[in-house]
Image (cartoon, rainbow, N blue to C red; front, side, top):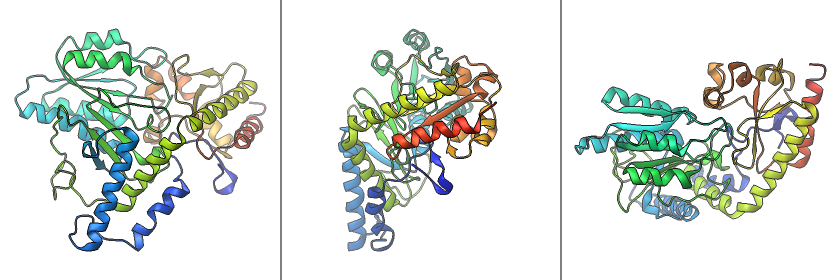
Length: 383
């Protein structure tokens, strides 16, 4: 996909372009049908019905009950509501457990949510990962020897695409009697995923070709998971997430979820092929380039590569302005610090600064990949 000024977009893990079909579905709800979904008049009822239809679409894509989904402003809010809401509720109910377990490579919002609860008497435990970015089941089992309230594990990493082995990790959490929260923002829509055994899960529309500003939290009903809301308000979303519902965005997320499931394996296979073509192109340009996260399973559309010495990511970005890519999470880009995810995987600071994240998506063509590789070669010739 090309943006303005003929820029090739290879940053789908930061955000995906809104699918034209999603945009078309949303547009009438900005102008023709502007009613508040909480209003009791006929236009309000129409908006509410559309919200519930979108909830059913997302639930169908996830194979869960619509009553188990809460609309949020995105995965960051969903992660905070899951972690803080569950911990505070159980503490209020007299639960004596205080340990909260997560992983060093989690999204910053999860890490900060867990750390922030230390001031309320909880015990944050941040587990290290193996060099391939995965959490060792033995390390998790050791951490769970002390009773824990909640464990939060990302299904697939937002920088490397490394997929955690939830099939081995989940039983350990269940045996320990802790709640399991899974950040599914990157995983959903890219590879098949199940919420069986999961207590709480977070999703974001802009990672699946939907609009920015809307997400969802899955809250298991049987046995029921209870949360305290993050803020007070009008009691929308069963009093778990007060605030006027953004009807057009919610409708867009429902449509995006349905499209993601419909494209399924065919799109995953196509993206894996494009990724392999991109990888081979980078290897031809830089024979000593290294794949971060190998040999762990990864999402199909992403490469996180460490370039040879002398080529820092920021310098490469300046030298190849015709390709949009990143050096890590967009949420951490402003700090200028090397990726904490890569550092947790054992890369040196210098290696982390030489690493690029290149991600393809629904609108990437084989021609885009070939052109991007050529631009890397032209921009970095002689370096």
